[in-house]
Length: 199
Ligand code: HEM
Image 1 (cartoon, helix red, strand yellow):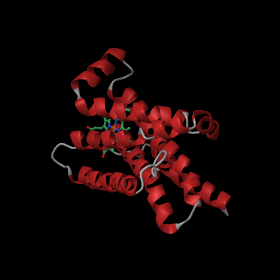
Image 2: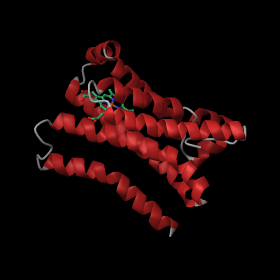
Image 3: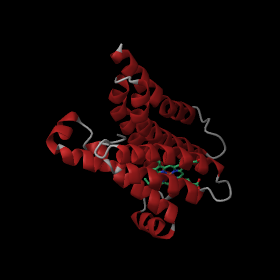
Image 4: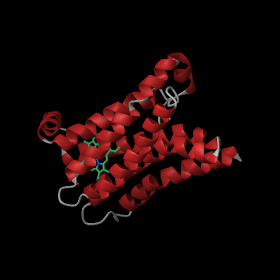
């Protein structure tokens, strides 16, 4: 049963990427394919980050321990979409020109914070295995708290580039505020209760 749920979640998370590839091959990404790729990958990186942080509260409310086993997969998928998003940016926006990367990072604050969010997710992805968890012990929990500033920076990234239409960004900000607020409350009620990535 648990295996079936895992396979199901894995396939569901892969669907947006599969759709992107399918649409790209069929030339069906719309009038601005670069924008479509940035949109789908950015949105799913953020949604999956939110879902990763939703696992712990859901687990507490429902008691379903199987949910915790999905957390790593959801977090890795968030990072995966973040990487495709970054690759799309390098390909479509700056054509792999190193000087332009620096220029964009310095001149566009929303790029700077997006890149910072991705950088914070990097060590989380590389230390997500059980072996690393055992090796780093308490430091693993400390390190994986980086998911919180990563979420804040990702929201800032969205808000900053939303220009006049900030509605969607505000929805994400409220969602992440609730998810982080739940952890602050839990920590206050029971210091030491919050632990790892999305704990
Ligand atoms: C790795 C560094 C990153 C770069 C260089 C980058 C760059 C961009 C660019 C150029 C856009 C499109 C802006 C426009 O349409 O004018 C964008 C949109 C977006 N990005 Fe990023 N981003 C990065 C990281 C992230 C991360 C880590 C997340 C989420 C976890 C994220 C989420 C989003 C979202 C949700 C959008 C809006 C998509 C839309 O609604 O069209 N980005 N990003």
